Length: 98
Image (cartoon, rainbow, N blue to C red; front, side, top):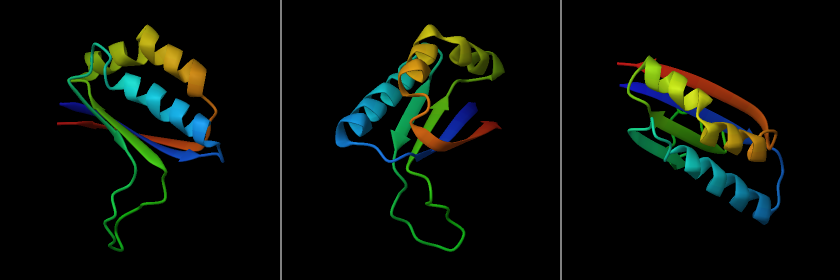
């Protein structure tokens, strides 16, 4: 298992920009190296240890480090970044191996 977890804090955007962002990011869950992929908003859980300050999160299981490297250079990944790159104020990434 190799999870690539991406958290987005978005700039203000219109509804059409939000739809574009979500539809483009969803494409990343379908790339060849992705075994499982999830995309969504913070859950409504509320405890002091939970950070819900982000707007969206993407988590993809790419299997291993080689899958991660393949995902990073996949033309589909690069195309999505070209469309939506810069729509966020902040992006934070955690990679997890297990």
